[in-house]
Image 1 (cartoon, helix red, strand yellow):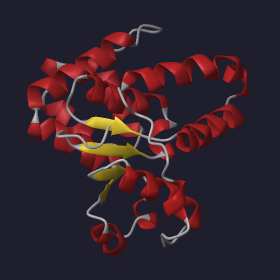
Image 2: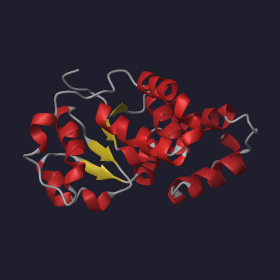
Image 3: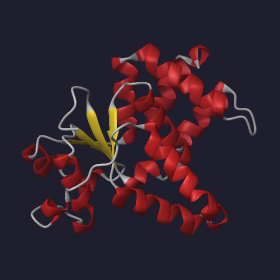
Image 4: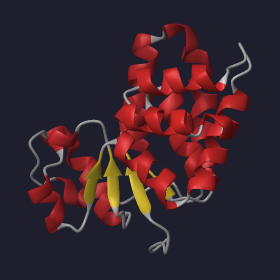
Length: 191
């Protein structure tokens, strides 16, 4: 895809790693609120870390990765590697994420590590780095009914055990999304 008329975001490995956060972000993308993208290298990073911390799910990683890649059409950015060595970031290991954002025509990178993507560098490329809490809040504010419906579906998928709206909000907060949790508390009857 040469570009997208929808807001396009590169999801960093650190936001794909946590199950709930991954589910929320991919569900928002599936609902058409934005265009989610990442790379095979980003997939390798978050799945490697997941298996390192949860060796019991190693046999399920392939199926999980397939589901993740099917969640967003045209999600995988390719042919970005030529840019990596030309980019300067505080952590050289994050250059591949910025390179993918440039080649993938992204408007933003959603990452929990904002310090690794300083605004002065990002503005040169017309890309913004956003914390997942800020990004999700933007979706809730821009398309409130659709975004709240996504949270309702995310809650409905959690059946083992079943999850109340209050429990989901508590999990959202524990996942480092305090603004989102507060917003959901105000609209608890809709999720």
